[in-house]
Image (cartoon, rainbow over all chains, first blue to last red; front, side, top):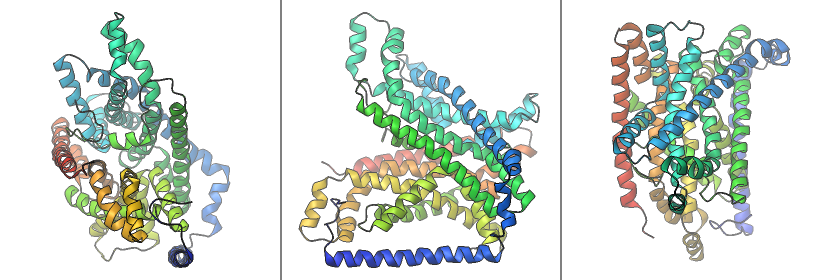
Length: 300
Length: 206
């Protein structure tokens, strides 16, 4: 293991590294010990608090339905947001200025607003202006908020995917006499979609994380919300947090690993002509650089 | 309140994130491991979970009162803590990718003139890396501005919390929603533009 940033450690550096390791572990152990002590003081390690997780009841009544709702909202949001995003992404590349302008404004607007505001607004809107039952309303509101925001982000992903293709592809398509629509649907999109797949999967991680917002603020019974009910029943705040956090980590870690595996695989097989949009691209797009043309390298 | 929350968390996460990035490239394997695990764990937990945990878990169980008895001030400080812990992971990734953009020759030259690891990092690599990552860092900052709304979950009176209470009490849902939305556009738009321009101006010419 060598890096350009430092020389291969000699005897003195190795001793210093060892010292640092020891100091760091001692500090870290002290922190852990302090946390342990505090938790022990409050009786967080009594088996009664952890026992629910070894029985099926806690899982079948609280955690699994919560997880199912989280996944349901995330899947619904993804399925609805993807075509919407594709439409807006393509509209932003339109030759007509007003189509470009309108879709650009819509996309940038929704990227600049926090998802939480969108959810709160949708929740209130449904309760006032429609007759969606109060049972379904949280799910509707969460999905609406997620769709509005993620459609905007996915539109940017689609646009970046299409722009990443070499210009020769379009020119060749025009040269053999394809129309604009044909060029888009049979030449550009198929290539762009493969390039975008990793970015889309990583966007799914963001969606899964954002469903948790709905749980706290508008009472959508997803994983985090079920944790509250569970903790209220068994009075185990810390254990339930740890279990839920681990569930989120495992779920998202699987998705992230899948995304990077996909990215590596696509990079290896050079079937498409465009660059592959990776995991880092998504972090960049989620920040809504309104009007600023940096980072994405493709300002309209 | 949103602005105050953003500013404090931004400073905190910048410091902690840079430290984490330094850990991840450091010669000490344990620190490297800690940095990697921290980033991977924190990035995969929803911010809501972290914020709620800092309120319910840290305050109630560990008795972290953050040096104040006032419940509101405590909530605010805990929210800052949660936001710093979460955003630092993203700052760390941005800075690390910035370190990767600095040409190898720079670090090699620094080592060749006998600088130690910390000197190489602080005098040669990081100053160049920071200029390269102003764009990505601006994105993190904008994301942070939007993420502060999550603090409403523990009752910090920032924009989302105000909007929720207002929207429930007043009749003009659409108008209130539009005003708050516009407020966020106003907050994030100049940040993006300003830092984007700054990033271009400060970029290391190669």
